[in-house]
View 1 (cartoon, rainbow, N blue to C red):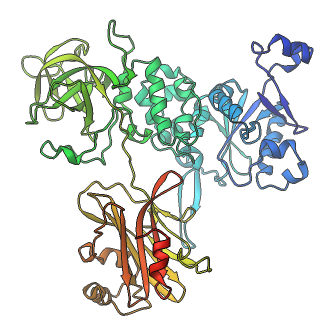
View 2 (tube, rainbow, N blue to C red):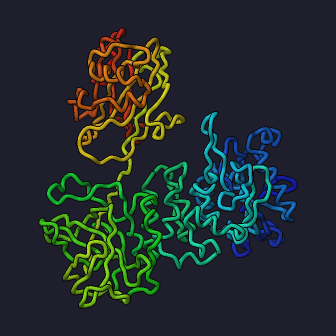
Length: 612
């Protein structure tokens, strides 16, 4: 473990007392000198120009010029003031050019924070310390010159800071000016309210006593820069050690759940739901992609805070495990006879839900073939609750044993009685759902101009909350309705032309479409959409939002080339052609949008670009 000396700012390496091999001891001499000393540790949200391992071990004069140096300097100053010679800072104490070292550090990080003498939480976006205790950790976020809104510091919404909040035994908060805001124990109620984390966990309780679902719910509203990190930042919370595979994307979260299954029989891992997914239709099963039983991200555990685990293992119960036929799981199941196909079943999870004793959650499964063992999860928007009842239909507080057959159980919300429950072993193939469509990206230049500098400027994007100006990607919201949908619009300046580019998809094939409209604030002719432009002029509102809201998808000449997932919109009156096409860029699907001035020799250039 590397630690930074708080006075000299030199990097020094130490070893755990039980981890120094004999041959290393002989080389080092007195091994006591290399045992890990008491150290402070920093928790923060990364900003621009953070000090790396190479910066701090290289030319120090260059490091001091970087924007992140004052944070490093001031954290060392605070540690010295508190009597600590050493501090650990994630930006500079790990050599991130070494994949081996990075993997070891991430797998050890929870323990490093736990072993620290004190953790300093630096809230760079909190300047004013509010007198209102409920808003003490709120930052000022100026959204315009007229007003501002306040929200909790970004530190409370990042993935990595979750373990940094839970692991240390002592934790102190500081604002951007390094003014102390108190210890964690001074604000437990406020932190619990903001993060939805149990006071038991915030006070240092054994996390293993809490269900997997509840711990996952803590990360439901947290973000990480890289897709894999939403899994890696949870390793310590579940006491899991696994190799890092940057580049695997969302599969990292699936791997994490598979590792949890190897050490835990807590079926609350399956107790998630996604309200955005439409209900399953038995008369139209081909419209629904089979779902696995493992979640695609912690986000779907947002409604699982009230799920508790069984504290005793069930003797003789089949342990869930991955096989070549899918995930093998044992459930108490019954056929759901409200579905005429006969292929829909209810499966009880062996965990508690809610505050009433004896209530267990359940999910719906669909058998993929008659008499087969393979199932898929359906109706993922629902997490049902069942209990046993007496002769009068009242729920029994002592519940029922989910490892044994049950004659009947009652669903709490509908009051329906389901009969003939038996314990079965089933196999469920993991098909992680894709929560979002590919994003739309407008190429910032004309791709058919032989390298000529004809830049395309996006003046405005709608809807603005789905637009990321940093990456240039419009990320559509999840919408599983059938038919054609409009998803976004760009107000564009292209050479001497100002226009609006509408775009969307046909959901039955996820084929993109695009349409060019003259910007009504500048141009006044709309040959292809006269009714639309007339309505805009009558309304008198030519904002991009109004143009988008009034645009009628039925007027779009829909794509006919479903195989290539490509659509052209040619506007001779504007002298412009637009192309929307699903392409694979660096291994990721994205909808590319192109604009081209038609004054060039179009046919040959389109052929060369492989667009026809």
